[in-house]
Length: 201
Image (tube, rainbow, N blue to C red; front, side, top):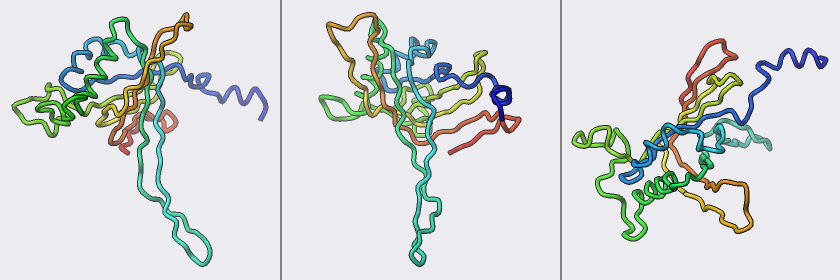
């Protein structure tokens, strides 16, 4: 294979790591107030990642050797980095979401907080603020079209990271990391199959 053949097979010029979009809602009673600001501005997510897919390994001994068979699936935590808006709205939303899960002072959960729609009594309805929220990330091509998308089911923040402050820092915008836990992820979009498949993991 020469350079020309390699370039010809490099479909779309390759995937660019800066072409992505993250969407999600902030959970909890107080955190939901941030959603109107957040939902329409996915570009406030500065950095994220496409998820790993990990299967455990079961080693079965046989006459001095190890036979490896597939084990159980695990899902690593998902981290995002968020640009800090001038009103601290998003930062405050994530802090409130975390506080609804476990309050700083009372050491209890927020009042009447169903974890998910499936657990919410009918008197709340599906619009009731929930602790678990679904988030998604889309990989875009150079035309801004979705090539692949992932949905993280049942997200909640296990850590709202610190914001670095420094007198010597110039020409930059404050940012903070958030670590989200989730139950599992699903994905759709397989151009190399010639059609869109959907996988639930």
